[in-house]
Length: 128
Image (cartoon, rainbow, N blue to C red):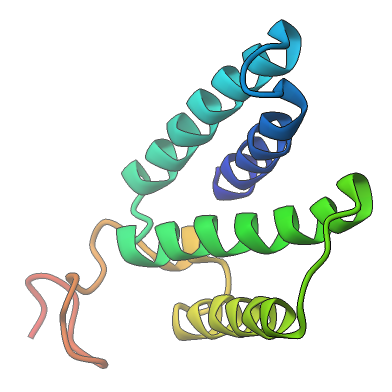
């Protein structure tokens, strides 16, 4: 679900440039449908137990990184050394989030898992 949400967000964001200020109908429709699908899939992932902070961080971080790279490849955007450093930090953050949640965030976050804000190593709800 999260991967689908990210893919839809990437397509929608790239379509923003093609929509040319929403003056071109087809790319404008792709933007609206893409973001609606992205938020819907992100909501489903959260409903399946994905931690909201981790899920949103991964969704936005991966989306931002991929859009920045594709912007260079598709639209000939330029990135400064500082921007490239920022992308490296985003990727490192996403990797650390995945490591901290046992790999796949959708599989490691269960409805019965530790509560948000619980100390590291805290027992799941109701377990002592």
